[in-house]
Length: 503
Image (cartoon, rainbow, N blue to C red):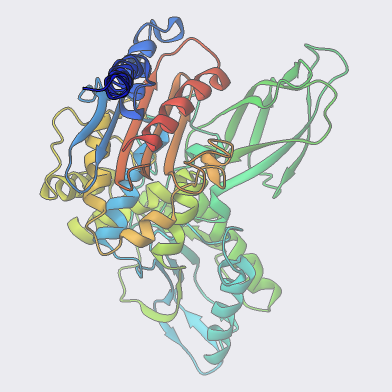
């Protein structure tokens, strides 16, 4: 063989060998794929000092196959906070349908004589509508609009006087509007108003405080909107550090008009607002309607009351009611948007009780929970270890695993109502609790998830289309962490980004 040919062959073989060993070296030092990075990150979090005393869990599954991409502790039951709203709203939109509406009826008993006198009671008969007076929807749910429409119906019958009462009937739901397991430090605050058969203005009032000039000084209760002179406040609120935020706790039970105010408001703040729960929304709504009609020239001789009060006093109008008008709420497809996007507890509780009414003919909390459990079990979700005490996630007795959340999310993908449900979820980098998360990443405007936050609880659950173009359901719950919320948020944001990057 000529010498030049031998040299060329040698060089050729040398290049092949160099390439072979270079590829081996590259394979050994290459960055692991995102799935492995995700698993590596989970291993690091197992050793994280901020989670040393925590119970936490994560899972990501492919919705098409149910195959697990990565998980840790995915079968342990944890306190979910507001991600429990997924369980409630997902069942509600599936069982009741996107077009479902709550109804509120104007009814009367007795007779209407030729001179326009109603010899009987006028009823506001509640259907559990949580949107009456809410500012989250159009003007058609405003108090003025609803009352005016009812007034116009009364005018058609030329009613000018009521020899009887204006009665608020909230009996569609049980008398106790909230879970018995809610904390005493929550009850009395706006987010723990519970769901009543008749709700108004999302069942909250607003207090305004003027802080003192020195930390520790008393803070003055300056104003209240709307004014409710029947509520008596014992004010122990003091002045906290500048920038300390709202640390006021309002103590008070339903139907009781005494309220104890504890905690602090920030130094230097005037008209600092704090929201509390109305003690008896049906009674308040009846009073508002009575005043509205009086201004229009229609007076009730016996003023107003609630059906609950009448029954407690040993009396009840058993005469058949006639319906004058019906107010319809916005459709459920619209109601679940603020329920999940803004995490409105009242709406979640109302939906849970509406499910009970529809499926068990009973507006109690227990019936709603039973119907929701049955729905998910029938969808093939294993609920062993699952505990549900409310619809919104406020109870510390709620327990759910991330695996159960992921399977619920997976089951929802097959529902006809899924599009309506998906639209209610916060979007990464865009809206709700996900607005400040994952901006400028593959997850922005792609990951959609419900968030949950309570003291020592942080959670996320939702969907993302990953880098492999597969639909993924995921859930993360952390209980009893020792770092602050901002630090934990960064840790969990990294997990969610790696979930989005998987293939």
